[in-house]
Image 1 (cartoon, helix red, strand yellow):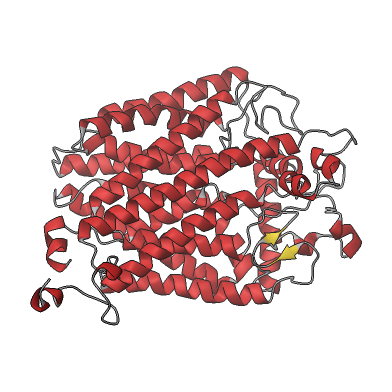
Image 2 (spheres, rainbow, N blue to C red):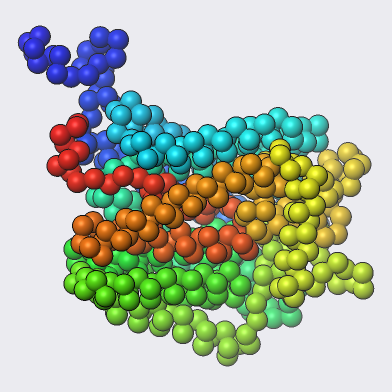
Length: 515
């Protein structure tokens, strides 16, 4: 290559072109790298989640010593650790996705493909990181089995690393700038969430691994509530809300017949299992998604958008809801939020205290109002005590525990302890402080506003359906976060959606000029 052509390529420190292949990636190459990297990361996370569920179900069985199975392997440190510390596996898998998100963001910075408008969500993430780090340094570092980076061993192992990974995934989503790359990611999401539905269907078989065939605090032993590999029916709803939002929007207007068919097939199981969880969050999510989709349909008709054909998708969704409701009403309609929470914490994780039916209990596990009032009051208690720095990552349960270190070492939990208030906004405020929570809400609001603006362009036929799916998903997330909590098996999907909402998807021709 002559000297004139050599100068046309960007290099770092005057090194050769080949050593700077990342810097000289074209528009298509960068977005393919970004999309496929994230897809691989989410596949790894999903596979690890499957393995985690199998190990967790095995570890919860009774061993020869009369306790949990992992107590049988105390002499084998490796096997003991596998069966006892399986909670850490999703967080480690999540870290891989976080690293990939960080790599994508760094490349976008080097290539200067980010816009000035994207500085705002980046600043929100920076503020979140700063306050999370300060909170971590002031956390319960002297408590046995607790580290701020990994989290608490007798809880969910969701420490600093977990929430940092969420932020990096968000930044990775911001960096994507091609609609084809986003659709590629959405296709992967639909397939991954469909596998969750298949797993949930298999959980109807009593011998198949699952924690919700029956509930400890219910007389009905054949509930078979779906949870997939997310860990809880409540978490599964969060994931299904993402899948259903994307499937509805894509099935109505995508130019690819194969994609429209795939998404339409996915709508029915997504809608069915959302209701079949028999949770308040499932009912709220279904309602919000339906209402939002109706509004988008009405607007599309007023704008006379020929590309938007919602009726088949709408019927499929209603059919899925109706089938689940029919089964529930036949067996007896009931909402199981409280029992699911304590099943997850006490039986599955060994992190909650056991709920006991006695005269002096502070709340009714079957009473939704009493349950959430108790959980949120506890969150407000910690927010008042630690308004700026919070209690630290994965440390919500520690102040509720007996102060005797010996009891903590054994994982002792008194009655009515819990490690999440099941309100994501209150949880972040209590864990990392009010400034963190404000920054988190600011990032969501920015994502929502940008999604609305971009969705409006769709009705003017100036852009694709992508932001309609993103908009439905974000609106659903805003509502269900009031009675939801984060999880490494589900939250990465939501944070990536929020990041994509802040992305600047331009035409390929426009990007090629700047590549």
